[in-house]
Image 1 (cartoon, rainbow, N blue to C red):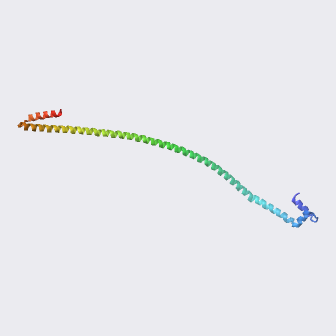
Image 2 (tube, rainbow, N blue to C red; image 1 turned 180 degrees about the vertical axis):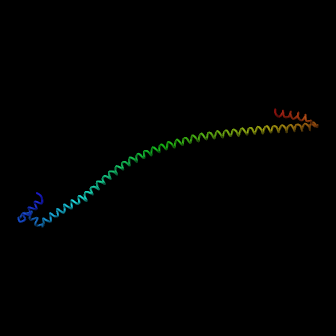
Image 3 (cartoon, rainbow, N blue to C red; image 1 turned 180 degrees about the horizontal axis):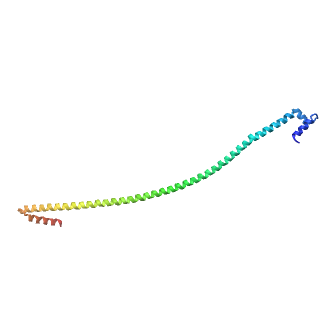
Length: 185
């Protein structure tokens, strides 16, 4: 039995000494007010369900979807970050290898240039030494020529003083040639 039938039966039997009827009378239940309040509650519950509870559920569903999308996007971002880090590591290793290759090429080039400059310096030094030798030989020959002339002059002067006579040009030439031969030997 439902509550309404119980209450209806209680109202009908209000004159009897039924304990339910006594309880209802004791608390002062007014059936018209009770039914109108039940109808009002039902209307309010329907309106709240339709215009408040359902939109709140929709908002919660939408929020749940956005959270799921956010989690999926975060996972995709993690994957992209991992790929980017891997690409960065590859680029860095490639750049490091390229830098090492450039450094090695620079060292080889510097070594080649250094060797070339050393060879050029050696060649210049040899040229300077050769020029110095030539200059020394020329100076030596000049000194020898000057020495021959001076010795020849001294021999002629000494011979003219020793002999006490004036030497002719032919005698001077003969003495100069003899002195030169002795110096050369």
